[in-house]
View 1 (spheres, each protein chain N blue to C red):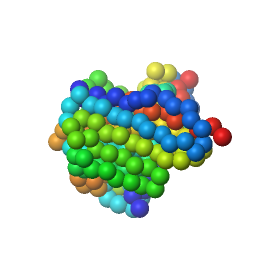
View 2 (view 1 turned 180 degrees about the horizontal axis):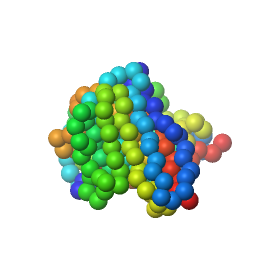
View 3 (view 1 turned 90 degrees about the vertical axis):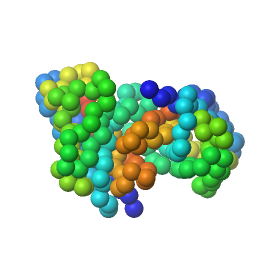
View 4 (view 1 turned 45 degrees about the vertical axis):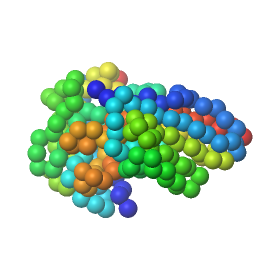
Length: 111
Length: 115
């Protein structure tokens, strides 16, 4: 099946720093979704991308849909402690638009 | 908007017990609901897709007789883990979607611990 690989696997950064993470696929996606999961909770949708090359922002978060349709990037500017969590990319596949989730990037922010 | 409620949030029970988890879309009608399982430090893995009024579609390797799914209304889906064993201990998360071209919204998950 399709796999979504995220890098880095984990990050330890200081408050105020910018963060970049990416998601790559072995096949093409027509939609890219970025979710954040806090400990013990379900994922929350951050940004949805629907067009190759699209750049979309949500507050301090910016995500881009790669031109090749096989990758996507998420940037967080001026990180704060509440940014801590696991960030997942996801893409719908098949006729039922089932979601395939990436391997996740775990973000830790130190004061 | 787009709130999904999952209940219970935490279950601890003895091996052999059957456990039912509910997933409700509170402010919209969900034509499709999904059930995921997440083991510690791993990603979400889709178990099954559930459409209102029809049988669920299970992913490869997921036993349909073990994980019973009922989607009797547009706002409620249930997952029953039958005769649960310690290896079934995991974090189970549901999601709901109004239409196929709209994102899924997730519940807060149910942590299942089988002793």
